[in-house]
Length: 94
Image (cartoon, rainbow, N blue to C red):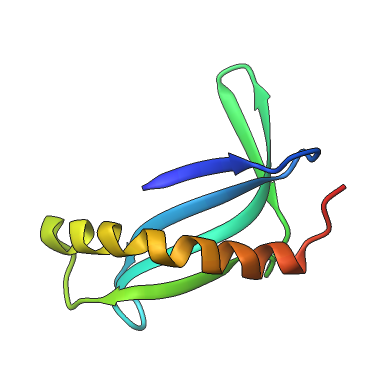
């Protein structure tokens, strides 16, 4: 899952992503990062500031599977607002 939420009165969007990571602590992670996207024809240029986002392991698993992804997807909504608040408290909206 990957989606973008536009912040009001700003050119910043929040990139919300659920993904599987097998390096380090394996599992499904939810990340929220402030990004700026620029559309140039068929190309999207995405820029961000290092260390401005936040990620959280929401479902530790030993291997990637559809069942694990669906379970992580069902648990993601309860974490999205918490993580968004952490990210928004650290950025300045122009």
